[in-house]
Length: 371
Image (cartoon, rainbow, N blue to C red; front, side, top):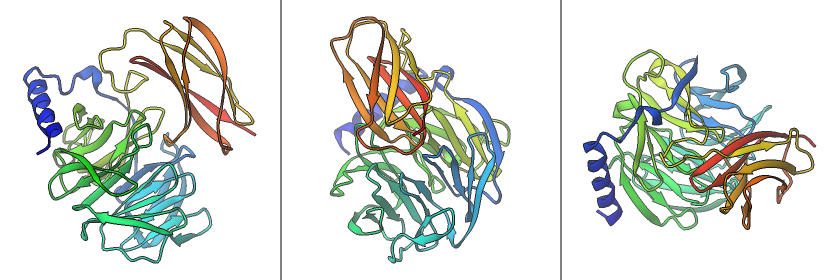
């Protein structure tokens, strides 16, 4: 066991002793739910703001309010699903397909030994986990093979691009989360996770906190990217905020959390009361942030108020949580100011989010880009 795992256990024991693993004020609040035909097997949030899910043989897209906007039968099956700037990828019985509004094609002719897990990084590279073969494959978004490496039973994958750039694989044999370098497949770290075999969806938020189902799908837990427990919520049942065989959760940048509640054939939506996400108990000063709507020509006009002159940071994300711009703000003075935040690459029309961070405080604002 590595030193970080020892630290994890020590911290967990101390937190349990004082009852601080999950404070009520740190738990997200139930918002809404909607029924899913069949039962959700995969879950993802797209850049278009839609929530995508699979039920074993069909793909559905919903608005964040649960209104169905798209549907398709997948002849090869539909289990894991993930989205990128380029496409929506669906894992079937033994192949990965790209999903288009008019047709679907295979990402690669490679046949996989399922069950299959999926992840995609900021550059559009696609990671395919072969749980039965103990292997992770890496392809570019055109399906060109790049690399593969051994990984024990990768039953769920996710990639963080928010300053950490790691690939996380849920090891279904050892019930632990493993962190890999997505460039060379080197295992960087691991930490124990109270997960079971039905945990097949893992989500991350903008702060690289990891969301997953635990206790046989009766609860959802949040861990830091180092594996420290932050909070958990839920219980077995069929009411609001209760779960039955939940397979996991995903998070959009706005902080909304979507849980695939498979046994209840529904998706439940949650939100932290703190708009910055998980409350670490350290924030005592609120920032003010406003983004002028709509934005145009890749220019985002941002007005904000700072309580102090400490260094701050502005970041621009799409709705799926991929960062497109980051600016460090130094030599500041308290008070209100306005700047132009420009994206370094052309961006498509759509909904984006600006995040302002100063110390332990953070605020977000939504802005629509129209060219």
